[in-house]
Image 1 (cartoon, rainbow, N blue to C red):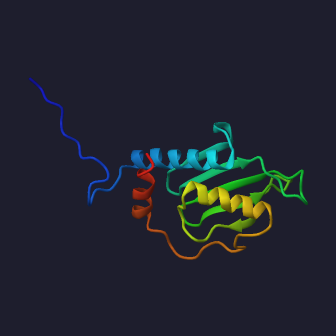
Image 2 (image 1 turned 90 degrees about the vertical axis):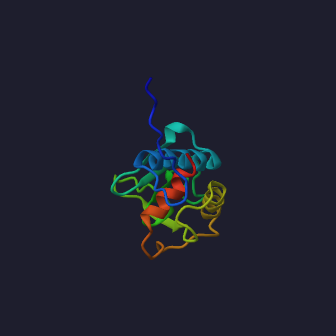
Image 3 (image 1 turned 90 degrees about the horizontal axis):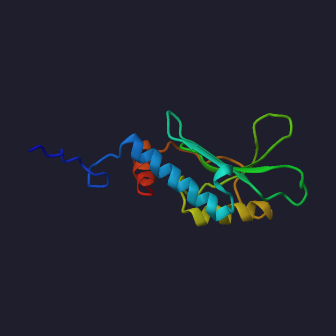
Length: 144
């Protein structure tokens, strides 16, 4: 008779999530943020690697720039930002950064987007400081 090995579970005190658990959590988190901002699965992308990143294409437009696409981007050092496509193939023009938390609840991200589109919120400067990647991994894995 053979028995399966008992594997440790993520989330127990002192356990560090595996990269797979963290990537799964990031994907779940980004799906929740995308749902809150009204973006479908085809409008989102994310990756947990050397540098973790996410991208969500937004349906919103700025009232004074109705032809420019907007996107919500995230990385593991600066968090969420709303950017506008430049139309020239260059990087996004960052309109505002969410500076209160690197990994805010999805509903807070959606509120941030609405405020930026209406011209009432967001910092022009990215948050300062270095994120604790282990803590971030744990927070993301909790979304899995």
